[in-house]
Image (cartoon, rainbow, N blue to C red; front, side, top):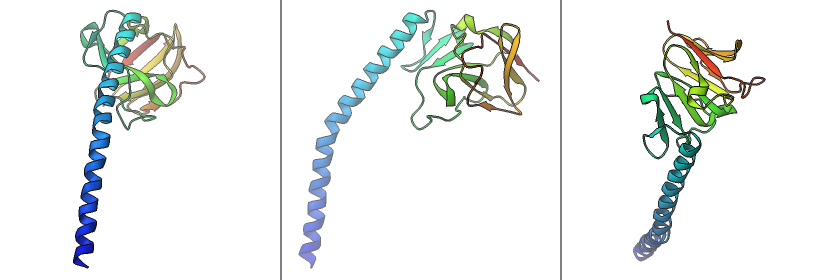
Length: 169
């Protein structure tokens, strides 16, 4: 009985070591490939949206930090409103699909400044007070704010917004 337990424990240890040896090199090379792909995505985005400063392999700052683009969703946040506290965010896809742009300033701002006009498909407001309206020229399309924080789908106004106006309270 004791030898059977020792045999099972030894077998489990050997299998665990073999699993580590088999998966470790692949995981390391996958991580390198992922970082290289992220850097390439960042390079491509900057080539079509110049003027930004990379913060890391996934974020680009414009206007001294006034506008920040996040290229890929953090792991585990797909389909979730995930705008950082102190910002309002708008997403390139419905249901908070990335890339994501974020602003925090009050007043009227042209999304053209950030090359984000006609791209908003969902939005999340993560500030303690106030609201933001999305406009197509002079026509108010929809709002998000402290009382109504999310809009998972901007339909029927997907890709219409070219201005935002944040009312700070």
